[in-house]
Length: 188
Image 1 (tube, rainbow, N blue to C red):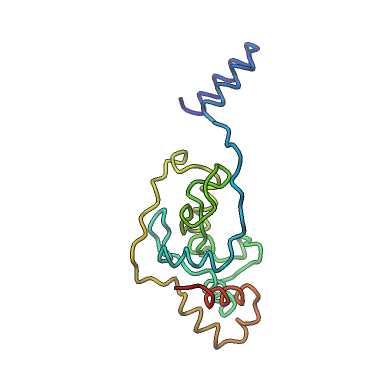
Image 2 (image 1 turned 135 degrees about the horizontal axis):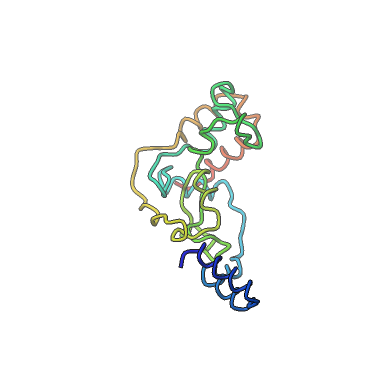
């Protein structure tokens, strides 16, 4: 039954005074999520390992993504070319932050009992991450994540490391310091 039809059914049952049946109708279309899996913080090193494993490729659509440190470094070096706002205001931040910025997504959301580990995490864009939220792939009509494939795309990670090491203005940015530290500590 389509979710909208379940709501119509529930509305009709409520109009008839049958709240119990209305609840059952809604639960059939919208099952209770259950108890969340315990979460732990994802360090930049842990994130980087997933990005590298996935070849800086969005596992939902196969598009190439950019290492977050590289994108942010570009904003520091060329703020007019790649504008950035600390709260990602759309009128003040380059659209690449949503479409190219690497992040991870839990294929089965932690809020839906998915594991909070690398086996349940895939690299994706901020746009896909926001769109997926805590939905299951089947609920969105999305396909299973694409398999990890070898790629020569490096997400501009080497560029970031080279530029960071030679430019004092990048070394002054705490988030870039953290990303550089993650690169140094990640075992490749």
